[in-house]
Image (cartoon, rainbow, N blue to C red; front, side):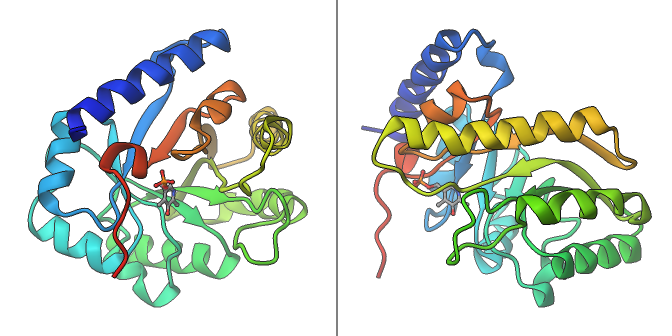
Length: 231
Ligand SMILES: *Cc1c(COP(=O)(O)O)cnc(C)c1O
């Protein structure tokens, strides 16, 4: 199937999942996870109507920006970002989903202040407490949020998570639901400098579950572009 056909099919699935959950399909954004896909594939996805593109690696982001691959849609950074590479990302993307440590947060803030801008970010939460994954634990999150008023270079726009792949739907929903509850709790607390309206969760294998639990930004790679070919 072509990228356009894949996107049309995904839109229908998104709509069905939203309606099933009593939600407005328009409230859910489709972010194309473009890693390992070239500028031409990115342009096809944009033409097919994805809402934004998400890049994982700084090198790919830089290359595709120089090719003007994202023309017409916002580009986001969704991969693990090393502090020594923030200069290549801050101010170049509309949103960084994957802020996973206080050190990275500070580096982004510093660079944004240097550029005289405010960078929109999401805080990545390690919702299942997995050793192998980065992200803030739930207990780290609230003390951090208390301090956000002190950062003039960033705006926290929401939360992001990559929950473990679970074999059954009940476990899958549990982590997505915990993320949703967390975002509701944060919004209710009204911290300075925080406007939590984005909840980035759900990938090709589990986006319908994520939508059922309140995700409003899904990040899909395989479902849009087909399998990635690692060399
Ligand atoms: C690759 C990637 C995705 C998309 O994964 P698929 O399973 O191919 O849909 C989503 N989010 C992040 C952070 C990724 O790295």
